[in-house]
Length: 399
Image: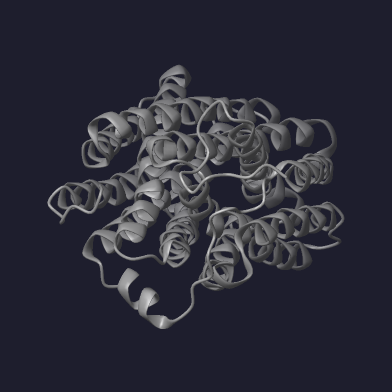
């Protein structure tokens, strides 16, 4: 097996290419599974005779299960290692994806989605810490951006494939297609992901306490919760908006709107390069403003402007998340370690925001239609911007 110096992998090296491909596949599979039901919410509401708010549980329970499991997966990775946890996480989630497609009832589908969220936790809990240890510092923001790009493509693929297959064969065909994709990606992760070379076991409560007391890390956790809450709220309600008049789109056509995720993939990579050049403190607030502008644009009536607003919002959100998630690992490492714990708390906040505020989008849609959803998202993003500006004033630790 190829040996790697402590400096870590650099772009152009075989190990860097294997690492990038494996994490891209892992991110694609995980986020395709996680958000596979988002494009199906109107279909699930119709088939199972549940309300828009209840159909959103198929997303919220998965993200909630993921968020809670992160609190265990991150610290566990400090003891058992990064690569083993990532490989098993993707494989287990893919197996449950097959069961989701076969679920005989709504309660069983919801239970499987919650369990699937728990199984998925090993990848997002570990990925950033793994990159921090295995990739050279000069290329860390770029590598983090590539991983986030994989998650963006996964989010798009899950929604797009699910919407298209639902049009052809219903929700079971949709979830079955996602399951096949996940199984294929799990095989790639098992084969390609390089074993850790620079990992050292870490235990004890001191690191956990420190990553819960650092004001900058707390600000980043808050940024994750509010930005992700706004993002998921908008997309949870988008399917219902496009299915209603004056658009009247079926799940296949409505699912095409998720191609704007390609902009998220590109923006996370670009934001990573900009952060390397100008600093994370400068990039995150700009990303917040772009995201807010996108939400405002969705208030327009014409469909092309609605799609343009979703595209702008998606690009801005992934710029914020791509930089902030990498910032957490760097900040924790510079402060004395505990990167796994810090990444877990960041992602716990991220998915808690997704579960709570994404679930509230159904209520906002029911009572105030799209202006209510936009108001919820706009208020959350305003908080994100305030936190990002406060982060600019935090003590510098290689940020």
